Every structure is written in C-alpha cells, then in structure tokens.
Length: 324
Image (tube, rainbow, N blue to C red):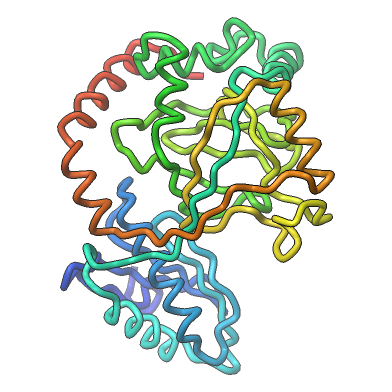
C-alpha cells in the first residue's frame, strides 16, 4: 500500500514514559487513535482516559465528540472548521503534556453495587437459550453458566469464583455496544477471571444481569441479546426516565474511569432494592476518588508473581475445557 493511500496519518514512537501512538483516518470527519501495541494492558486505557480528560479541559474549535475505547479513542470533528493536521497537532500536544505513566492521576468514582449470584433471571436466560437455540452448548450444562466459568478457570468451586468477583475493584475502561454498558476489568490482577463468550449469542438477557466475556465484566443496562456468561444480577445502570436521582443528570450510571465493587446480597434483597431504585427510595453508593496510576503500578508489581501463578492455573484448566 502506498503512503498516499494508507489510513495511517501519523505514528509516534514511545517516549518519555508514554506509549506509541498511531493516528488513523476514519472516514472524512473522524480519526481513530491507537495507543501502544495490540495487547491487553490496562495501563494503555489510563492514557486513553487521560487524553480524553485533557481534550475536555482544553478543547479545540471544530471538535465534535470523543469516544474512548480500551486502547483507542474515536475522535469526530467538523472538517469545515478544523483541519485534520491541526487536530493531530492538538492531540499530540495534549499527549506530550501528560505526565509520565507513574505520575498520572485520573478522575474516578468508586461505586458500590449489590450482586445476587445464581439468580433466577439469569437462570431463565440460560434455560431459554438451551430450549430455543443450542441444547448442546457446553457452557450451559446444568442449566447455568457458573459451573462452566468455574471449570474454565480451574476454581475449586463456585464460592472461590464468587470470592474473586467480590475481592477486587472493577475498572470501567469504556462505555459502548448498548447505552450505559460498561466494560469492566479487575484492578487486582490476581482476581482475573477469563471465559469465552456464547456461540451463538442469546436472544434475551435481563436488565441488570452480570456476565463475563474474556476478562471483561459487564452489567446489562437493558433487556437485550447477549453473549457473556451470566453468573448474577445487580442494579439498573441505565434509566432514560430518570426515576432515581442517580440518573437525573445523566441516564448512564457508569463513566469511563469509574471503579465498581460488589457486595453480596440474596435475590430477594436485590429484588427489593431494584424496586426501591425505581421508586427513588434507594441511594447509590458513589464516592469521588481520583485514581493514582503510580500507586496502582506499585500494587500490580507487588502481586505480579501470584497473579502469574493464577494465570497458569487458568490456562491449564482452559486447555482441557471445551469452547462453545
């Protein structure tokens, strides 16, 4: 491919504690910016969100919208008001102005949500899938997805898996696919849980269902199709009607950079809280708490050996487990 026809507008090599950047043309009025290499590295998301925050603090005329991803960001602009070259220069300036990785602090909130494991709504979704789509799906043996998650990750039992989900904060890397659907990853690498998605997908999932796909947790914001392995249910994370004060200013509960922790409740308790949310009697537990990347990196390094042992256990278990 010739340079003239290449979608790559510019590439910058890693320097000064910053990852490499690739600017790609995405149609005639947008850029796709990729950070680092194509690998799962949570620190790359920190740069994405730091640049996104920098753009909000220092906007440029003609910028329309940004959409952060895991290690990329989609930036749309008005070419009649802003040239591609000026936009790339502005983005580059924001990137260069960022501190080195260890010195980055990201605006963040800590959100505590209840979760009921092995709930009846998730069980109903699995049973409907078996009955109407795929009766022989290995991830649905026993009319649930939980036992498959346990087997695929080499956990001793369900409780060990539940403990992993409860023991860590979950970093909201980006929002997408459905309105309010946060893609969340464990902050503690020792608590990583990995599982393949459905094949094919379900046609129905309950609002508030919690599932896993790859290493990613998600809370389903609306009744919808879905492919993540279901293991529990939490509270609404999207409400266009604004029935609860948490949604009055924004129908989306989660934002990129939020951290979510779960505490365990029974299904009866969750159902009662669900009703309280809609009646505006429940108050979501949300605390403003900036995220210090340097502290995170120190913590990650301190538990790395244990996390690697857990990874080896997962890979050994996954090798002997059928894939949907």
